[in-house]
Length: 145
Image (cartoon, rainbow, N blue to C red):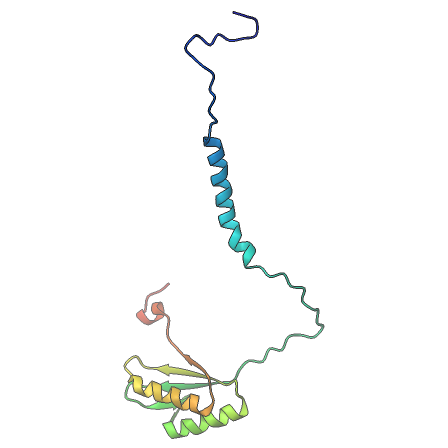
């Protein structure tokens, strides 16, 4: 035995192959990092927006509320009405403010045709913002959240 060397024995030859495991581990970690960060980089648009001293205009749209009962009765707000009267009211509201929103509250047993007639009358009068009002499932079943 010489000074500073370990005895390898006669059967063991030096390893001449490259160990690929650490290289593959590093590549997989880099792949995961790129997969996670790529969508974050693509969705960002850098803008230098101008500074304005005035406050932004907060104009809430006017809304009309129409209720439809299961027997087909129509209500504008809480007043009973007819489809012809609703059509005239929709036209007046669209002429006064084109951004008027129509909110339809229909009974679950109300015929779909009645709802479609009200929506058609509103669109014909020029109201294109129509919302169907529903109730949350927890409130409808009476369960507490």
